Length: 115
Length: 111
Image (cartoon, rainbow over all chains, first blue to last red; front, side):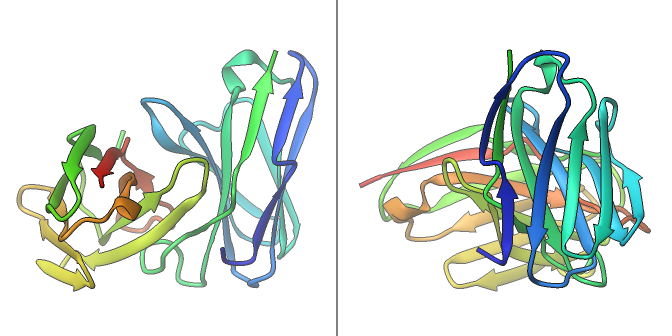
């Protein structure tokens, strides 16, 4: 795997609690992405970042926020977790030209269960 | 949604046979990419084909792109048990820096 780690790898939490997932890269790539993967839906983009402090919403951003204070770290926060946010979350990175011209490299995923 | 759709949703073949997966999408694109996902792992990039290309090869992979039909196909020749995985197409859109993934084709190669 390209130098991307996600933490935690597994988490079980209760409805209404805040949850933060971390993505860390050692590749110094400009673009970072958070996706969720659910059966029947494939991967759907939650938020992405095109630089430190520069972020934008994706297709399914409601209920999620992100922050990027350093090139290497991209945090995804579920402000008040709901059962519909039970999913597998993937972080991805790509180079300076963005995903139109560069492949994305994916992290190993975080399995989140909201009870 | 710009999300692509793969067809078939699932495919089961014998080792040594060829596997063909198709992807259809809705809007104009710059490029189309194919990814593979082994069970419980992240996606791995396989190949990128630009909108001005019609065919591209990489090892046992052959990708075609027909922008007039907004469709692409991925052919895996001489399949192996290790090719068992889910395969996803991903498209961008003009001016965007993110990808839209399809729902995937689950390929099973029987030894």
